Amino acid sequence: AEVIFVDDGSTDGTHDALMGAFGALNLPAITFRFEQHPQNRGLGAALRTGLGSAAGEVIVTTDSDGTYLFSTIPDLLACLKPGV
Image (cartoon, rainbow, N blue to C red; front, side, top):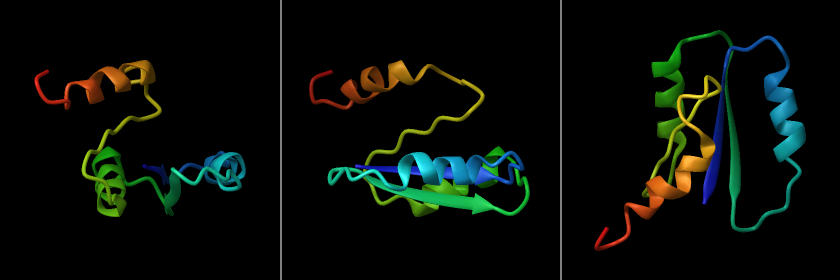
């Protein structure tokens, strides 16, 4: 599994906070990747950056605007099981 963070030009220290919180984690089953835009390029560019960095077969996107609750991700993934 991998988690890709795309900081789309924030100026509030988000990139450093993410690196501090997740960069030092030792979770062998999860790869953390950090992408950063020097300036805000918009949601589409952030998605393209993240999707371009992804190596997985299944990709789930989310954002800081709370488009949907993180707790719904397991339900989304369960739909990929055969017979569902």
